[in-house]
Image 1 (spheres, rainbow, N blue to C red):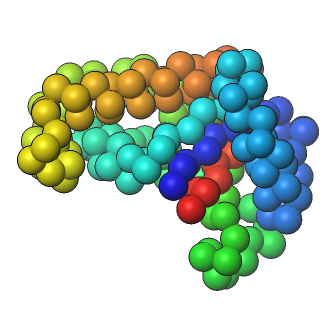
Image 2: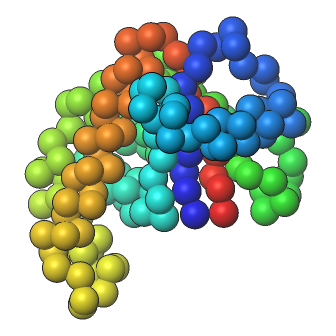
Length: 160
């Protein structure tokens, strides 16, 4: 399970679920190259918990980095039949970047870390779990900063 994020100029995308599914499929096939180029990122299986970490901030834009955005036109009502897709506008991308830059990982971890650590089970050292989420946060912060600086839209696909 992955949450796949891809930044692109708004003019390079179509507001069409079928077209965007194909676009994201190609992007996923080239994920390693696109990550190296700074236009893509992904969070493997921990994205719901990462969202919960951000929600611990209590800030209004905490929802944007992981689950924020709107469904594209033509999105099927059966979200299990197709990858769920979400689009963040360039303005929402800037807000997500600002949130990730302004929030302190250590403060978030002090509020939500115990619950996140407990969800991993007793075999996981707290320092290991903390570093997993610190890495997710660092990577998303850098991804969104680049996307915002470029004025890009962020497209998200859930690959299950």
